[in-house]
Image 1 (cartoon, rainbow, N blue to C red):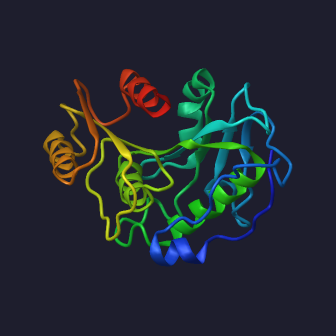
Image 2 (cartoon, rainbow, N blue to C red):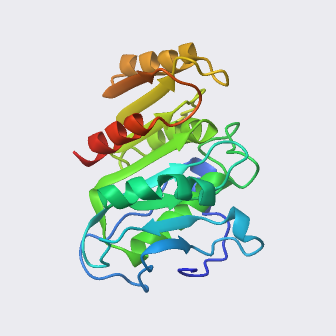
Length: 240
């Protein structure tokens, strides 16, 4: 079901600077109709449903009750629908709103991140969710897989005053011309990753630790992906 027809592909501030200005309401009731429980299309792309953002609302969702929000970004060649399907059971278990947008191209724009059209769409999606739900401002996280993890690090560190937690699974790099706030960072990387070498994940962790961030680095004996126990550990840290 479509929550609302936004019809705008980019937010100028986010696209030009990488800064997300939308914030959850601290008082009052939702200003638009709340999403039904389950999978929802946000209606942000006029041309194709395949490049829309997906919102998953768990069974415990109530419009007037504060709920954690996790923004999670897909890997290259994937989309938000696939990411939402992969993570909806975890979101249901933990009672978390799950927002899974789709990159404007086949993958996220890491050349210009976080100041790019992808951030503009994410800004519009967040504004729509904040208008339709009561999001707990202390529990807003961003995460991603592979290219999505790289983009999540870039956007998350530039908006650490919004995101309390950044979760990265198998990232290859990050680009942060601007850093705001001081989010916790959860990094996971497989020792047998043949797409992005494990040593790169270790280097990312070391760089962030040296920069003074609170980093949890959790290697695992596997390849390129999201290990179930790693996801649970990341969610436990996020919701603690």
